[in-house]
Image 1 (cartoon, helix red, strand yellow):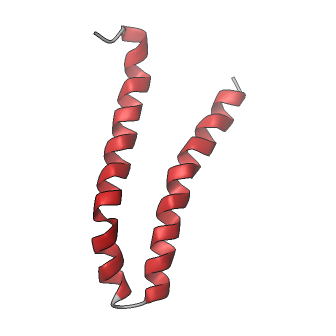
Image 2 (cartoon, one colour):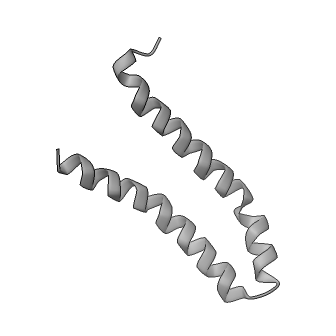
Length: 67
């Protein structure tokens, strides 16, 4: 079982994995739909998705460094 003091981080990790997992699963369909309109926009969407993924880790490290 998970200790009560560890439930918050475990829940946050599960939500993070779920959100970015679903996003990664849907990203090709989104890029194809947007790519029919503009290939540049489809590329920007992919870059923003990857930057958001690493941005979450960056923001978390900044918050942890402040403690």
